Length: 77
Image 1 (cartoon, rainbow, N blue to C red):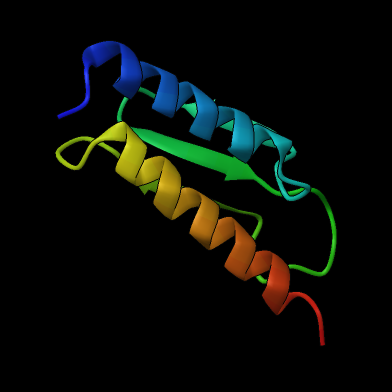
Image 2: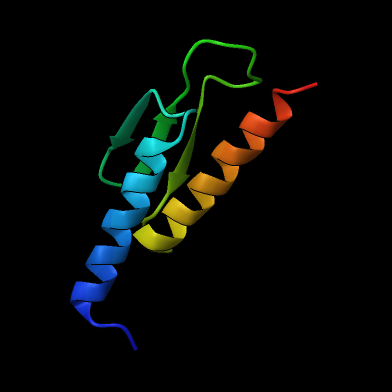
């Protein structure tokens, strides 16, 4: 089992990974979900959101990274 400090460090690392992604123009934590606003471009969406209440922040950030990557890859013909 991970310690609280390890869990916090993991969430901070995942947030840094999301913010470093080329699709992340803006990262928002509204207290119940994480949202990424995409830069202007040929994307099917303007951004994406994943709720973390009930499922955890690390899980939500991992899903958010997956969704961002999927949208990025789908933008290429």
